[in-house]
Image (cartoon, rainbow, N blue to C red; front, side, top):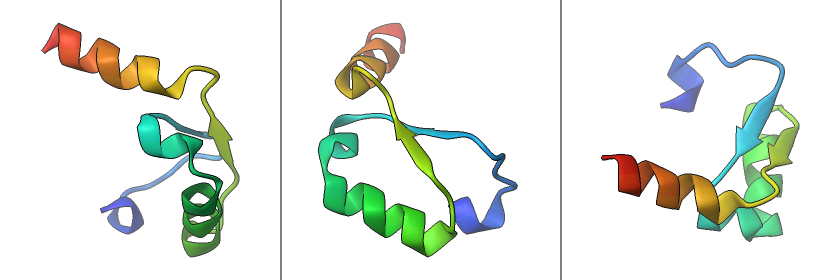
Length: 52
């Protein structure tokens, strides 16, 4: 899905999997971007769940 979208220069990685350095590196390599991991990546997922 990400390959079909236009992605900007700054991408923030959130959610529990953002804490996995291997996943971060794999995504950076696959898409040729630098990801910034949110300070509290689990909070974004929890907030989204609470609002829906």
